[in-house]
Image (cartoon, rainbow, N blue to C red):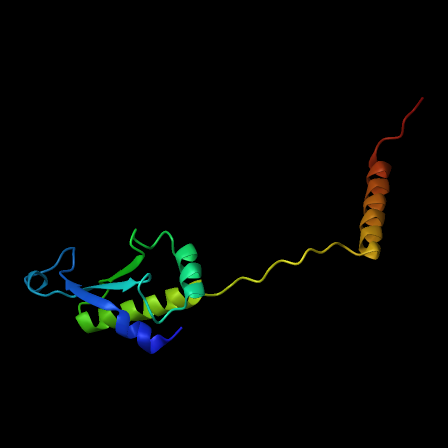
Length: 134
């Protein structure tokens, strides 16, 4: 994964932010829409593309485009920085391949200890019962 190439492939669009505001909000476009075309990216290898498509399937459009919005601050530049930061974090976290689980079973001594403790518990509880008077 080449970060410099990825950052060059990002597309940004400034949109008017939603929600309440004064006169200023109707004039400025501070909300940022970041789009990244995963399918046509040359900065990501084919294996990484497959992994990202699988892990980000709910966040991708039908054309395999990732869209991230940011409207947290009133500054367009800060929103752009936040969107890039979120995007890079999302990509890095979803490129991690989980370790394969190795099957394991308890050792013979562990099995013996567990059975002994169960037997001791059983005897302890049996002694709590009232004695049978026949």
